[in-house]
Image 1: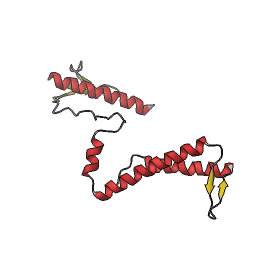
Image 2: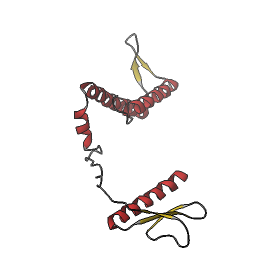
Image 3: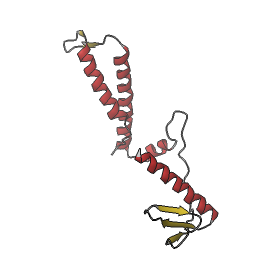
Image 4: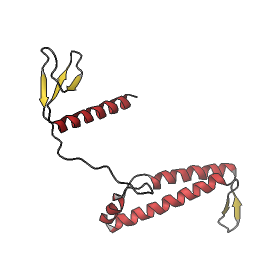
Length: 151
């Protein structure tokens, strides 16, 4: 909860600094008697020491653009800029991610799972074996579908 409060305060501060910078009015920074730092458009009342901040906005960072499938539009450009080894790594990782997701879906949706044994014969998994396969496949999904990129 403290992180949420800090994030909210930081956001309010950022917007106040940005609005102050756009209006070219000075911003006053000061601490009250309890040690809380304040940023205001007017100087504090009384003999409280303060600092005048002249903040200027240099540029605005555009928000990332997304495609209809939810991926960033810049991802294709990033992939083109990668080395061939990194591209191969990321392609294999995407393929493994899709395969792991498909396997997990099958394991969860089907009541009985039939696998081919070492001798070529089919074996039906027990409930314990099925739950172990689900746990392994969930780990694979986390590993291959995470946000990590090629080194």
